[in-house]
Length: 211
Image 1 (cartoon, rainbow, N blue to C red):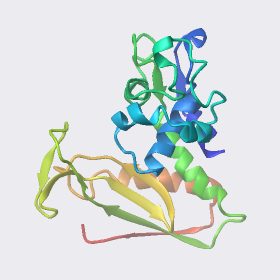
Image 2 (tube, helix red, strand yellow):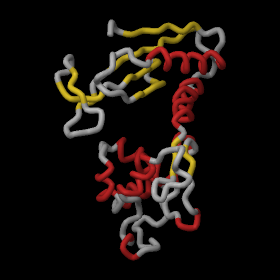
Image 3 (cartoon, rainbow, N blue to C red):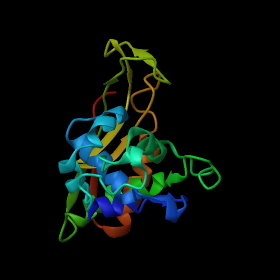
Image 4 (cartoon, one colour):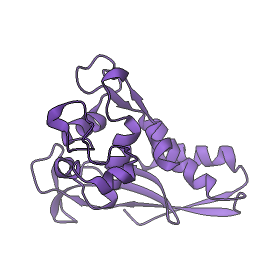
């Protein structure tokens, strides 16, 4: 049920009578595309024709022959422009925006990552380790927030990750002009608070490198 739960973190302000791709379908298409190694949205201008991907997403019209507009027929999935509206919708303005009318609840997605971790245990563990790390996400164009990082010797972003074992609890995109520990206290307060509410007696150990 992961895709359904992730899709529930979005609010759709589009006209229901004009929708061919539900939020759940768009989320599934994007997630499966990422899992298959297609990171760029423009990859979906070709992937939208893929019947196997359409089957994964859950489409009934696997060839796209029943699409409403003739120009879309033969394409069962969404193009990059539609997925762009999913990813770039701004919650405060989505309800009145002409195009980007899907808004993500970022706090709900943050909670979902921690909920999935908590649900993976049948009973509260005695102790857990939360591992913090910053790493480079190299950039190859003129992306917004592009900075050169002296340690990694490249232009990059510097995302913060928090794991417990194999479970990802936080992935926070940051620009590379930040300190490696920037924002880590706020993220820990949020995550530890959510864990404590479910596991009040579990010992929580924080690990990180010198950065």
